[in-house]
Image (cartoon, rainbow, N blue to C red; front, side):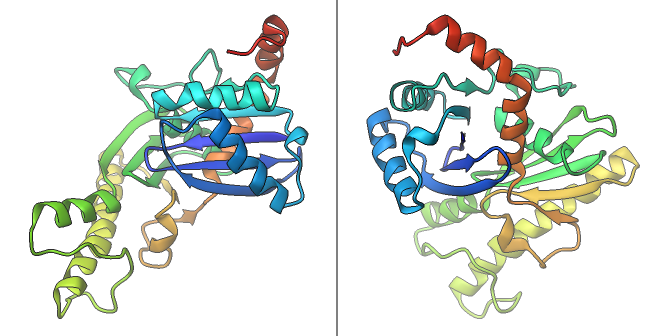
Length: 269
C-alpha cells in the first residue's frame, strides 16, 4: 500500500492507496516541529480505527512546501515504515514542462495539482487551489505549466481583518444569508465569502481574456467545497486532485525509489 503525504502551510493530508483505490485519508494541522515518532503514533492509531496495520504500507510519496518538515516526514517513512520515500522535487520526474522564468520557484504542490488534473481533464486548464493562499495556475493545451496567480486565501484575509482592526471580531467562514450584512459579522462574512468568489471569477475572466481561448476551470483545496454552487466560473470541483497527482508521480518514479532503496539498504538517518 502507498502512503501519500501532501503537506501545505496550514494542513497536511495523509492518504492510503491499495493499488486500485484510495481507501482512506486524514488531515492534520501542519506543525513543522512534529517528530517522526509523533507522526507514527498519530498515524498508527488512525489506521487501527480503519482496521489497517502500519506494516501494510510498503511505499511512500511526499510533497511538502514546508522544508523544515521534510526531515521528520522522511524519517517517518524510513524508521517506522522501513521504506525509502519519494520526495517531490528530489530527482523526481514529473513529466510536465515548466514554462516560467524561474522553474525552481514553482511550488511542488502546484505541479502535483497540474499532473493530477491532466489525468482527468484535457488542457488548456485553469486550476484553482483554495488553501492558505489561493492560486490559479494555467496549464497549456499540451500539458505544459505556464504560470499562474497567487493571492491571499480566505483564512488569511479573515485573520488580517481581525488582527488589523481592533473592533472587528474573529468570524467563522461560511456563506452569509444575504449579500448586504445587517450587522458587523454578516458584513464581514459577505466581504470574505463573496469577495473571494469575486476575486476568483475576476481572475478567471482576465486569464481567459488574456489568452483568448476557452479553458476548463478545476477547483480543489480545503476551502473549495464551500464555493460549490456559488459560482458558474468553476467547471469542476475535484477534492482528489492532489492525491491523484501524487499517485501518478509515484508511478512514474517507482524505479528511482527502488534503486535508491537498494543503494541505502537498511540505513536510517
